[in-house]
Image (cartoon, rainbow, N blue to C red):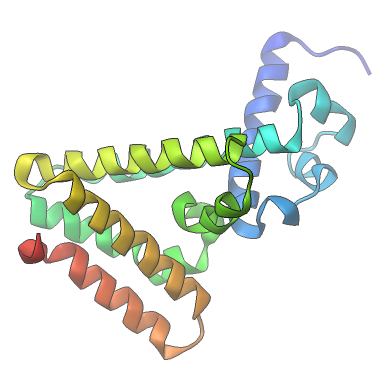
Length: 192
């Protein structure tokens, strides 16, 4: 097989990062082999190491991509009052669909445990911390000057914690209760 053009190599690299962002959120970094990942985008395992230094390096890029996707989704919520935007965000983020499709959902929830177990300074941990800061920035955009950074952190913790617990208890009625309670808490800004 002949060499591919730079543009085609860049496209393949982007496809691998996008697929990894989804698969790592679904099954964790350790739950996806390089062969599986490359097969997902129709490439051979041999091409992986021409594109990435390691699976760990790819994990960092995939986490960054997943957080960029999340920020774009949240920023796509139409302009409205703070309360209306928070209700839209909470309804989408803390939905049964979001709970049941981790590969398309929040990387803060899906990759948090993995990032916590990873070595400090690893590509995943760095991208995760950068992504959390980006998530906080998006929350600040939602609220404008009406809330403090601490308020945004509490909202972030409610969103991520609520979704995490709902996923961990899916199939039990408490899962829906957690989603509903977290949605109410995010929308009700009287505690801020």
